[in-house]
Image 1 (cartoon, helix red, strand yellow):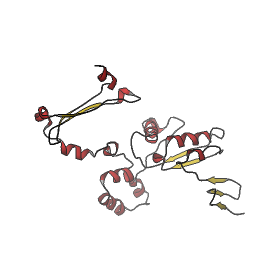
Image 2: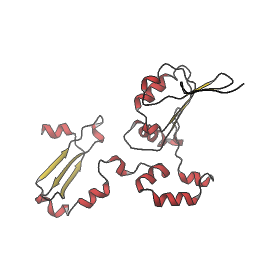
Image 3: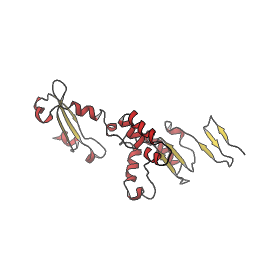
Amino acid sequence: NRFIFNKTLLTITYPTGATIRCVSGDNVDSIYGHESYASVVDEASRVKEEAYNALLTTMFATNGPIKLVANPTIKNNWFFKLWKRIFDLDCHTDGYYTAYKLTALDAVEAGIMSKEVFERAKKDYSPSVFKRDFLAEVPDGEVSVFDFEAIHNNVKNISKCYESAIYFGIDLGFTDTMKSDYSVITGLDREGNVVFYDRFKKVGQDLINH
């Protein structure tokens, strides 16, 4: 009895006949058509939602377990939304899904990572990367096109200089769940400084109509 490795099919066959198959989330079509009894999705936060939906179709008949493993990347993707919805529930479960949060501090406590390595990483990595990869948290700046610190450094006496604004940018609050989206108006002076800023919840279509 021996394990059989097939590099072409990316499979490992156990002596019992059970097979582990590795597939890429980038090729959604490759996921369909297999009957799976258990699955692990690594780097799930970087996998397309279509790939996860395809995986679910392979589990309907077997009702097998699925483990999603990942560091969080952004707050508006399917993985984080699913994790957050379950993690916020009592006991972190809805009876079907269960959410966990493990950080590098848990690894230190378990003796898997030394405290020295943790402290060194805290110094060597950028705050956003350290927060994401070692504390399993999404940095606020990760959900913005521009770094928040850079934005605040560019804001010049908004309360006193708003009359000098000559350029305005308007981001209307269009979204599938309009009640949760903000509309934003930003004003710049001739030198490109932010001198006016207003952020409010009002459906963008209402702004257009009025």
